[in-house]
Length: 210
Image (tube, rainbow, N blue to C red; front, side, top):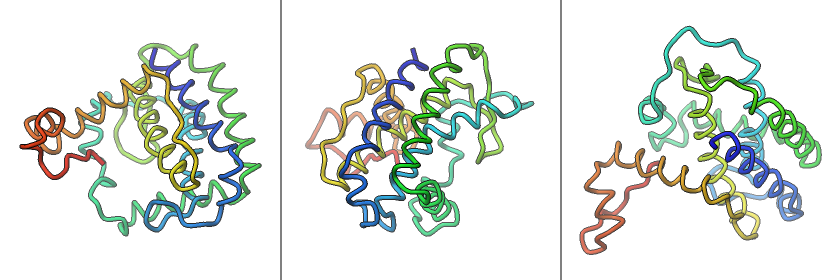
């Protein structure tokens, strides 16, 4: 289910990247600080193209960590947009987009075609080494993190270019929301998340996971 949900979600992102509004606003500022539209588009495209590289990598020699532990170890969530890591994320998006919107979309489409062929054949127990962290995840957990990225950055890109945020497949959206709630609870505590969702009068000022 996760693999098909990821493929369906990646298809949504691929369609959004082909929207004429993306090309029209390509070099304009996005809704994210210090990110141009092309950079956000490149970062979104990377959630598809990078999976091919991950599948091509050698299996790690370590056991996978949980998704909550994965996010707990990830320093890009520290809120410092000028950190070396977050600056690198923005530059990577720009680099991916450097060839232009048409070439980038062609690359993403080819990657999605490749993944549709390869992902169903991957072993259930497949473990992958993260390209940017010295720890491992199961393949399905890694794809779950990519679905979250696609969901968040599809909204960022759509808002930036003035089009409707694309609707994700229902089961994929449920997976993303479940992950966000668990991640938020790990950062702010379960009571804060409960109150934010159920009790407006006692809701904290923010429970954002990211």
